[in-house]
Length: 169
Length: 381
Image (cartoon, each protein chain N blue to C red):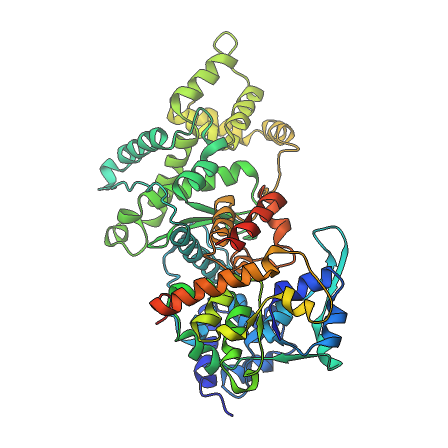
């Protein structure tokens, strides 16, 4: 499972993170480790502490980093205007999906554009939503962007772009 | 497996750093490296770079990751004009301003926003320069619809109607303001440590540079014939004329005058009312013929008058309310709502973290409700 930063943050907010990483194989792109790092009061008013490095050190979470060549090669697949829309973590996640070492991981993202990008690279079957992931371990989360409907829409839009070559080089 | 791009990326990191006249030590600190030797090793292609390190380096160097990867060209930062260039950090401020302008340009494209075009005025020669500057002011006052107290509305109208983005940054005690005009649009940089009335003047002053860019901007052949001091003086005249419209100032003077006379306290009150420094008002009154040079000079040299001025402005020395222009924040949010910008990219554009993004949006009156609507919109895209 390749998680994006919003998922890491929201799983910490809902205090489900520990349960998830103890039951699933979780891989985090190196950029997401930085993007989700936080130690202060959450804008919601509660103390929030996110430091995946500790989970990485203890072996509960695996971190993967895309090389410069891998990032460049992935960027070369997309039109500039589409690539510009993606954050650094999403760019790295898509680059990792193309590598042998992450050939088996599934992308679990809360962002429609990242899912579209994965579909455009031919990884339609390797996208999964957080609701599905949590259900597999008997947990739930209520948030539209983590729903199957959201994933379905993103897969559809990505599929249309792939067929039309829209957003690809 | 050796990364073939390592050497090339290392060389580009070095170039980006050198363009900013930044030491390896500073870059190491800004990008979260424990030692500057790590930067040295990266630049020489002797050390692998992780993607998160590349992101941090790009952020510290104010370039997109693609620039360091070699998939995008280096941005042209020579198109920034300074009023007073600070001795330290000017290169970084320029790079930041150019990157922000470029990102704003992307936002306009993503949201299909169509701002009004800021007019350009031709300044032909020295002899007619002042008259042309006056014509530019008259035209702008009509077009911008600034009202009777232009300083109160100038920033908002420039940003919301003409998408001239105004950024505030601490430029130290020796930096004043800068602006840039390119295919990416117009942007003004103002020293946040200046007092509000000086910041108002700076914005008006930089506006002059923007609307005369084609004739007097940097790199224009005609600007080579001009002494920079002359251009700056003209920009000051323009700013004073724009912020202190003759009719409005006259009306205020008559309203406050007692038997044809007006005292120093009232003059300071008028300057405060118009959102300018007392010095700017006095020179404007001299231009309008209400004061003689010697009278203006005498007042400005009078320590008692200066003290009263400071006293009347006590409690008004507030910092800019927001570091980011609201138009920029709203367009980024709109782009994200439309599914044209990912949420993490929005956080990058708005120079904040994903966790703190809702707070920043709230500062710009984008409420949780709009956030929820956003999520529903994205679900339904």
